[in-house]
Structures are given as C-alpha cells and as structure tokens.
Image 1 (cartoon, rainbow, N blue to C red):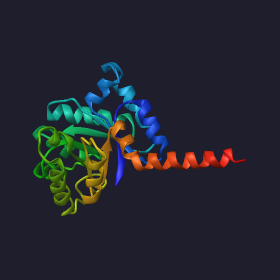
Image 2 (spheres, rainbow, N blue to C red; image 1 turned 90 degrees about the vertical axis):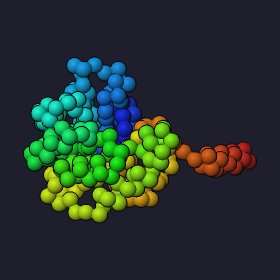
Image 3 (cartoon, rainbow, N blue to C red; image 1 turned 60 degrees about the horizontal axis):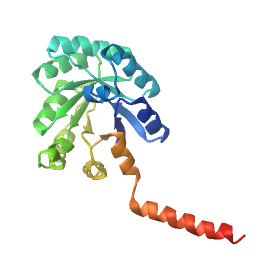
Length: 227
C-alpha cells in the first residue's frame, strides 16, 4: 500500500518526502486554511507543492458548485502542473464534470465517499482515484473500516480499462486517524492511505521500539564506560 500525506503544509510535506516513503499528496480547503493561506495565493501554493513532489500526484480541490464550473476550474487546476490531480466531492454535478474531464485526460480524485455505490458511480464516471472516508464514520459511532472493505471489494471486482486516462482506479483510504486504520486498509488491499502528518508519525512509533532503543543505548554506554 502506498502512502500519501494529507496536508497543505510545505514543511510537513518536505519532511515526509525526506523519509523516502511518500507516493503523493492530498489537500483540501480545510487543510489549506490551516496553513493561513489566502485565496490569492492558493494556486501558487499548489504549484509549490507540485514542484516539491516531482512527478508524484498532488490533489488540488475545486470549489466550484456547478458542473460547468467544475469543468472550467478542473481544466485550470490541471494546467498548473502535470502532476496535479483535480479533487471533486461526490455529487451529481461532479459526476458529470468527471465524465468530461476524464475524457480530456484530466485525472480526478473523487472525495467525500462514504459508500460502495458512491465509489462505483465515481469510478464509472471516470475518476482515477476514489477516496472513501474512515475516521468520520468512527466520529459518529459507526464502523468506517467495514464500509471501506465494501468499497475495496466492489472496486476490485471489476476492470476499469477505458474509464480514465490511466485505465485503473485506485482506492485512497481517507480520514485516517490511527495506525490501525492504516493496518486494516492494507490488510484488505486498499491501494493508498492518505495520512495526516501527525498520524503518519504515529505509524512510525511503537513503545517496544522505544524501549528497545533505550536498552541498546544503556548497554552501549556500559561498553563505552568500560574502556
């Protein structure tokens, strides 16, 4: 399973890239707002992220509300850098926009997916990525992992050749909160987990690793002291 980082923070992206295990970046309006970014700087900020990431996919979300607006804004966002993927929320307007944009070679990440039927509709419309959310189910006391499993099974049941520019549909596990979300997504065969930097750092940590390192350091200090 590939790791994307779910952030618009340049420093977080830079550090995650340095680890050598990052395969892409996803952003959304909330994440951009958290950086303190202004509307006038949004496009430049997306270009900075895209350049930083080389050829890795970077999702930039359209804020248009009509099909025509999504098509226009999608074309513009895609023109900013060759690795920008246009992110659209699942709805009737975005399905129509995806159908047009995918036919033009624009890659679409369909977001805010909470059910298998939504994911199937997005894939049939031509979405390159479908992003089912996990953590938001947990927030309301429901099981996001079981819903993700339904999406994975349904999407992987079919051949999506000819539906989009790359002839494949990848599942991005989104709204990831914990290392267990990552584990469960990988076990069921989701293609990607897009993870906030805080959660990504949690994936790196384990108390037994910390204990082991402390033990090694203490034993090595004894070796040094004995010289």
